[in-house]
Length: 157
Image 1 (cartoon, helix red, strand yellow):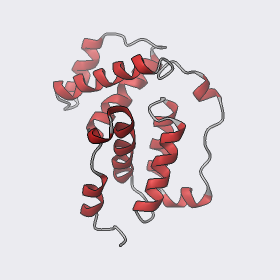
Image 2 (cartoon, helix red, strand yellow):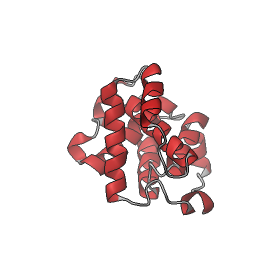
Image 3 (spheres, rainbow, N blue to C red):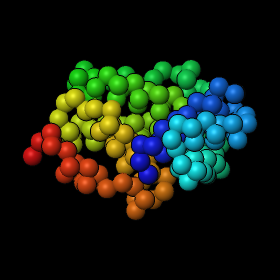
């Protein structure tokens, strides 16, 4: 899918949360996203993904307990292994309900195993794509993590 798709999803979820479960003026939001450089296809795909997710998980956006309950605390090793921006992004995706607790664990585990410290925000987005979209769309729809790892010159052998 890609990080552009994920950016749109994060934006849409933040709008839904801000409007207390509603998505006001879809045309205006779409125009804003187009003005940010996103294509009609990317925007439509993100809307569809959110709607599909809402059909299978009714608590996806509306789960207010997620922000009230305690959040996952990173270990010292995890905190040092991920860049600050990457940790903030994980927290944002978790808060918005985009990543489940299990998916967060998968992202953190893969990041610790695949890349040397610190895992950047861009690297984290690749991991999130591989975990999120393999879970929601089937393994074949997920980005091939091996392709990205092989391209990364900082990868340890």
